[in-house]
Length: 252
Image (cartoon, rainbow, N blue to C red; front, side):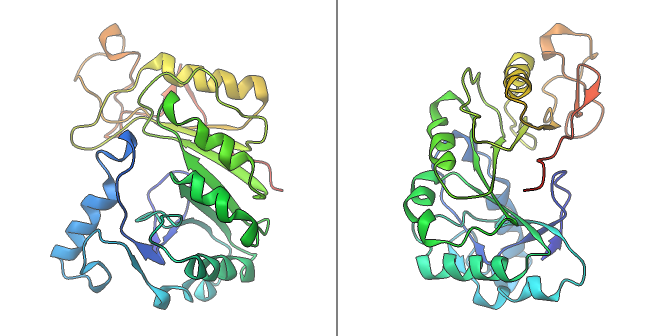
C-alpha cells in the first residue's frame, strides 16, 4: 500500500506486480520503469523486476486501513493478465467484497479476459471497473466492459494518442482523459481531448481531465503549435479552455 499522487485516487494496492505490453499505450509504461528502479533499490517485492508475480501476503492490507479509502488496484500490473490464476483474481475480489467501506478502482487493457470471467466474480458496489482506451482502434474494450456486471464502469483514456470519434458511453459512469508525461512523452492534441469531453457532455457522463502531459515545446500558451497546451507544471497543466474538470461518478 502506498499513498498515490494520481489525481483520481488516494492509495495504490498491488497484490500483483509485473505485466507485458499489448498496445501502443504501453510503450512508456511507468510501472515497468518503477519496477526496475525498485528492484535496483533491493525492494523484495520487485526482486523479479517486471515479471508477473502474485503476492498473497498483500491480500490482508486493506483490512488494516482504519478509515475508508479510494484505492487503485494493481497500479503496477493488470489484474486480468492471462498469467494471473483465476483463483487469485477471486481472492483479490473476496478482499474487496469483505471491505465495503473502501472504494476500489480496477483498470485493465485485457477486456477480453475480463468479460470471459466476469460472471465468476462478485461485483459488489464498491468495485469500480475500468478499461484503458488510447485511440480509436481499442474502442472494443469499452464494449466488452459494458457487458460486465460491474456496478460502476469507467474509462481511462490515457495516454490519449489519437482521435476517438465514437465512444460507446451508454453504460459508462465516468471518463478520465490525459496526455502522456515522462521521458519521450507523445503529444496530445486539443481536438482529441475536446472530442471526448463533448461526447461525455452529450451523454451526461462525468468527465475528469487529468493532465495535458509533458509539454513538447517550451513556448507561450497562445502558440498554436502546441495545440492550446497550458504548460503550468511538470505534467503540462490540467486546464481545458481555462476550466478544470474533476467530475466524479455518482455513487451507485
